[in-house]
Image 1: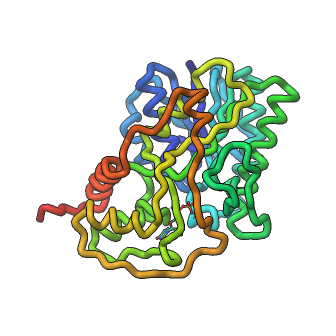
Image 2: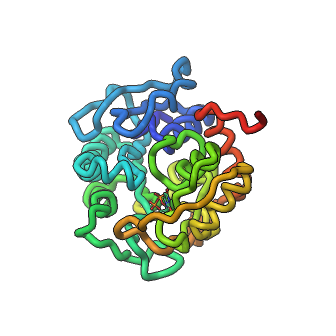
Length: 317
Ligand code: UDP
């Protein structure tokens, strides 16, 4: 298969590129490095089935080759990044989604949209199933991401209904692992960096808010099933790990796993920070025969080893 991945230099996009290459496919990857990094794709540089094009997907572009699958992952994705790049975030989820859908239509290819648990906002229903319509504050700074992704979902299903395009939508819940940017502000890279440096761990609010953390290899498996199985046109599915943890528990687990001497400091909760988040994955289990396999301890240990290397920290010293 010829696969085109936008946002391929990002955390999830780079792991997806690896997966499709390892399964024998050809990958054309696009990124403008707004929040991604060339380091994430360095290991694929000499791979003949891999091609990189530096491209802002909110600007018109064409692809010379045939394409069987377009995967749209280009967008700032951490709250810190999308609040720093609000216009780019809204463009990636509006113009970027429309242009990539047009490309898929022209190439008669399948299309996968990277949506998000953020479309549920600060959820009033728990856990969140795909039929829940969400609770987004459209006026919040955070809504630049939430609403861009909600628009993306709607335009994807419009292309499905109007043009018969084979679109699939993954609502991706909090995912962590190697190649997250050290300073992207999300909970796992931030806490791991602080713990490894024995610096205070910054828990926002009282730390009782919850998230459900999925290790990257589990997410990539789910995405691979969602894109390669037949008969899923028009499908929207949650992908995430339903093991729900309080943020204070994540902080303590990371301190323990890294043998850190860090203390915990409490800082103000960001505006409209969701109080609880946990995916209902019954649909993913049924349709994709998929569920996460990697335990939080194992996933965090692997991620900690990556950050030790990136930060040049030797805990044995
Ligand atoms: N968080 C925290 N300290 C940090 C970074 C994040 O307590 O240094 C909290 C944040 O307030 C949220 C949760 O961890 O409740 C997950 O935040 P993240 O930015 O990773 O992703 P989100 O799920 O909010 O998009």
